[in-house]
Length: 466
Image (cartoon, rainbow, N blue to C red; front, side, top):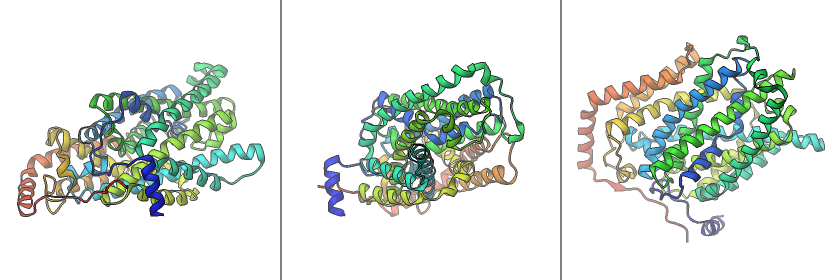
């Protein structure tokens, strides 16, 4: 197996180690297309089906746009740190959390991305099964989910260079078919028909909750923002490409979902949200193509992101071997159909864990460190500028614990009418900023002493295979 992987690596080129600053290879157009394809995905589309008819169609569109603009701001701020340093998101968490403290968000990220891969593989499998059963009568959703995820893993083994080559074409296919769905829906009922769909408050959806869900979707993508934007050739390419690519894909996908379910409602069908077969029954093969292609695009990025997180935990691991093992686990997990019933809870779990992380990172880099991290000190095994107390920044960890606890309380125990994502971000942001100003000098003195006692030593990195 080792020889086979080495021969594959020799043919496709070496994927940079997560601890090696990446060289810019994505211009503005490539960055735009990558983020356009990234969130043109079945889960984002089905998220749009959660809003209608719970709230008015017009209100849903406004919430989708507003929530996306709020969320993409966080995504771009974190992604730009990746462009500046050349390092992935989970390595960058060390700047605020410490060399060892950064293991915590990296572990969370690995687990959550694995859940994403299972959800999307199952939805792709259900979609492919729907089409095959319609033509042949054969039905096995689990088998098709495994098949879809196997294709994803093969694409992910190509590394970021392979993803760059494939993603733009997938984005074009998805946009063309999405345009067909919009044309079909509005040709029959017109925009006025959708705007006049009566809201049904008994569904349990409100504009505030919908806004929270849209922002949480952006937070779920921010875990990968620096992983991809570290390959941008300039800050301008990263910022502009990400802003317009992510905004276009999210607004298009969620609007597509809201429109598709609104179309089912107007035709008198059963409006069950987050079920691809409900809208497939109306739009058939063209929408099935969008769902299948979107999973190929997005899950490839997810497996790549999981591998980057693992390399943060195990710096001297081999990319191809890590991607293969992680990919095999994602294939096996695609057989667990029960996760689909927990998708919304899963989305709010992501918010609870990562909203505090990104609030802390933004304060630490853009305010406390004034827009500067030392890439060398981020990747050393001991000492350096981000060693803090034994490799952990207690201010960041404490702020995270408070933020995560509040997110859980405001989501599960005493839900806020405005949702938990934005309040959690605001509280954690202010808490870490104030605590850093008040106590940061003490942590810095401990950091300086640790640096004198233990000289910085570089991590072992993986040599390119021969």
